[in-house]
Image 1 (spheres, one colour):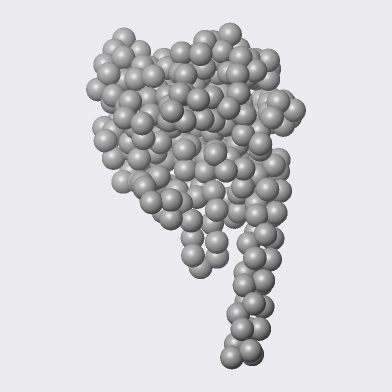
Image 2: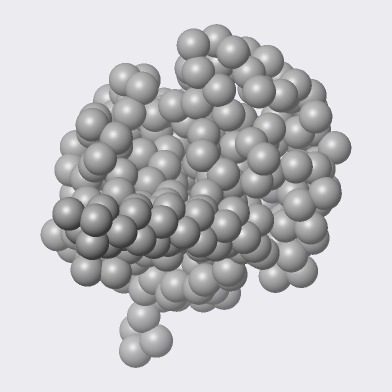
Length: 284
């Protein structure tokens, strides 16, 4: 009996040490420099004479979380500017919070994000945390930073027709309204939205979707996968968990995001942002 008790104590101690080590590692990964990832998207309808058009995709800043403070955000902005994108899109969750309670003042976003530079500007869509807190304050702060917020609206930027679809996870997506807003505009259709789960509801002519929300699973363990389902509610469709997803003739790019949501820990899903190049087929 005494031997079994000693074994149980050792097993419990080992479990505590393993969890502690995992949390410590997760804190480091959450604070790490985001990885710059790249994708080339060949579009048959892209203008043949047009030079490749590069879009920086960012998401899930979650400003106010312990993993995202002003100094870190300023360094990320500098790294993005150094890549010289033609357009920058940010697909929501600028802040952290629930039930109307913000963890930080949205006005503190203005100065760091005002530093973003791209010839075609910066466009954003809201995320679920933005809706859950104070979207009006967040949008006002973004506009002061020179960022255009589009929710179920559309704008033309260079050769692209950008449809900004509001967040599906919080129930604010209106695909019909976004499509109606394209009237009188032209360009290669690209949807930007917070949650990639909206993708199956989009018409076939929208060949590219840029999204975030999933944090690429946030805590992803070998042989187990993402622990997100253990939270007990639908977080995202696993098909759209991370990276470049081929989806019935459509390309979906899902970024892991820059911040870390309510829990400042990442394991096996480091922060990242994407530099996506749109171009015409070379043999055309």
